[in-house]
Length: 478
Ligand SMILES: Nc1ncnc2c1ncn2[C@@H]1O[C@H](COP(=O)(O)OP(=O)(O)OP(=O)(O)O)[C@@H](O)[C@H]1O
Ligand SMILES: [Mg+2]
Image 1: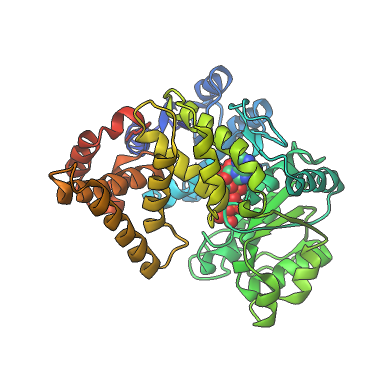
Image 2: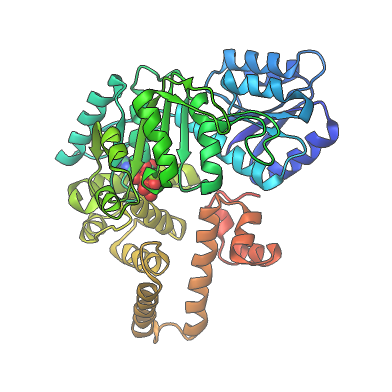
């Protein structure tokens, strides 16, 4: 669970902000001055700081600089009132993650916090390549197949060169892990690493997020804003899902790659930026070029080095080792004993085609672990989890989903009709249990968000958590 430090001298704001963050499942520490905030940073390094600019004693900018000196990878979000935006802009130039104007919109702030936390994690948690499954405290890339050995070699060659890298592979194959490994093994490992998920940000905001803007550039641009590319100066920017960027932004990215400079929106000044670009996509870019949705010239600029991640079905020999790693990791995170997995169950995992790759393998094993009663994971549990997850998997269409659900129901009717006198209710219960646990997994155990996601009231969600004993076995909070 991430810890957030709020530094603000306004008691009211501190209290209500703390309450909000606690309800979102974060741990919170507060400080009323820069000096006491610094003390907290030294004592118990938090995962994120939200810092007010106007503080008594040591001011916001001085506090930011001192925090940045002690912990350069600790992300800081600055809160500013309208009159102090210059200080906030100065802090973002010096490496603060971003700033927000007070009073802020809650969803916007929560979104910013989630992104800043991701960035901090990416920068500070190293990815171990070609790892053995027993190191659970670090993110690891597991796999001894030839295909994965080639990936490790490519990372080793490309990382120190500063060359632009395009990472390709299906969804869930580990593109993000590769991007982090490239950054961590590069000469800029101490400098900023900025992640932009090009599909997660609406098209209308992506341009200003990347390039920044000048005061008056558009209605509502009340002051200058520094974009993420400028903030990544001398560091690395990871453009995730680049295949989904709109074409006018592609043109600007091309200019950045060719001329190493950018212009803020509404600005005439050409700003030189020395930044390494790593991009990733699961799209077929060649097809996108053919249908006019991706620029060919940008494609050639991006693919100076290409790292292609193999789908899991093409490296099935890695599945048993990955399964052991993923299982121990989930057990470690959920703080429950690892029941182990039988050889037959591992073989069964190798028989499946894994359209969602390692993410899907990970989800399936997490599910078997949550509902496991302590015995080693066996073939039946694997079959059931694959069957159940197929019904709600992203990669299946609604018709496929219905079909899988129907097959699952048929199996229950054939197999359990004699042994279960309450078959109808127990099938409905299974679905309800899966829906509840999936929503909790998806929201990191946050009950407020899970109840919103399901359209249930919090008391109804609570009763389901109790009914299915989910609380005992998952790290649910909120
Ligand atoms: N080789 C690997 N060893 C262990 N875990 C892995 C490996 N590759 C990926 N994972 C895990 O699988 C999950 C998905 O990986 P990641 O997010 O990097 O995929 P992705 O290719 O970026 O997918 P998407 O295109 O959907 O964004 C993560 O939890 C990651 O830690
Ligand atoms: Mg990804």
